[in-house]
Length: 418
Ligand SMILES: Cc1cc2nc3c(=O)[nH]c(=O)nc-3n(C[C@H](O)[C@H](O)[C@H](O)COP(=O)(O)OP(=O)(O)OC[C@H]3O[C@@H](n4cnc5c(N)ncnc54)[C@H](O)[C@@H]3O)c2cc1C
Image 1 (cartoon, rainbow, N blue to C red):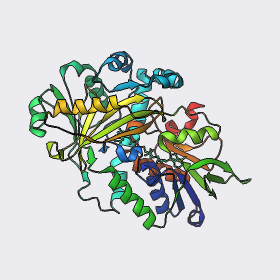
Image 2: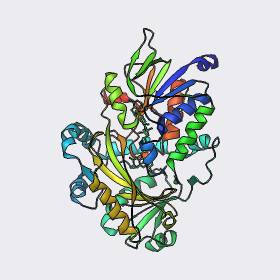
Image 3: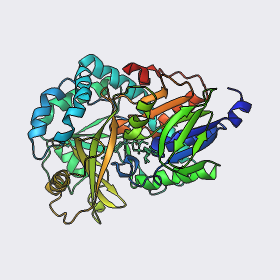
Image 4: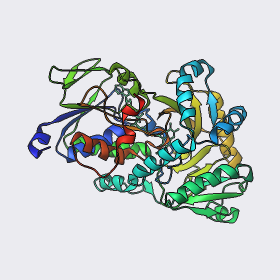
């Protein structure tokens, strides 16, 4: 695309989560005129606000793996485990589960691992490009992330460690003694662990999101706080984004609404099996001094990150759609699990429910829509959408600008579901 054309081209992006904002910033760098449209103020409720704040470039081993199918029944029955179902949603989720089961073969697992690794490997350097332009002092820490476990859970750890070794991912195995040296306040219930040395974390995802959003406005980006109802097209294929209040015509449009994207893609006559894995967090205010870095206790499938808000306890994979209310039982599960590791914790605050946007093959959708050449998608980044914000933004902006790339982007296309 010539520079002249780019300067005139306008792009409307639906969704101002980490995906939408990063795409917007990379497009502005290329000379596009960008409008972000979101029904909420950025970072108010979205997944990009409430996540665990991990930048996890190591996390290419997907959830679709052969051994998970054996583990699911016991995980569902466990009162301390991460998995739960809202029974009223099970019938709606059945097609997603069937597709997921199909994707749990070793071959499919390795396909996902390879193409998650392709983008995860570029995640940190892509953020560095954006972070050069904002002040992140005190907000991003490079101390790695620790996973630990008891002997009960050793087998599945071996699979992950082997795949990560194959992919050349840096990991440092930890003895109980090492874990205690690194994080002396955790109750010594663990038998082993691993430190992902290249991982980072943020002490406040919302502050980072808002700093990137302010940068977008400062660079001439435009924001509309409106609910998008539908997208249609002019006779010459330009997208018209219709909100509750207005209609806006652009040269190109992007759907980046996280777990809510399906409402719009269905209107585009495309059946993409996007659903949500609901997750929760609570804060224990004033206790962040108990940890230096994020930790994940694998047997119980939850994590704790030291943040400005205190210790943020994050976890649960709950299949229950977008409309069921927050489950007090899941909150209690997180609170009890946190107190198991840190018996000194007292009152918790800020009970939050968020929506991971997940596809059955655990690869995101990035690329043009099946039916409309001027409409692009960027959603479905599941547990890793915070980590993948900048690299996805760079990739999707590059696609819109019709730039060449050495990456194989086909595996992320929505056409894989046609
Ligand atoms: C509990 C939990 C912990 C997590 N921890 C991590 C982690 O540590 N590391 C990591 O990498 N990832 C993590 N994730 C995943 C990550 O947070 C998400 O994948 C990511 O934030 C998704 O970003 P997004 O921009 O696609 O969607 P969102 O952040 O959900 O943003 C979508 C935006 O679209 C807007 N929108 C939706 N529909 C419309 C409409 N019709 N009109 C206008 N606006 C609309 C919404 O208001 C929202 O602002 C976690 C997720 C959860 C739930």
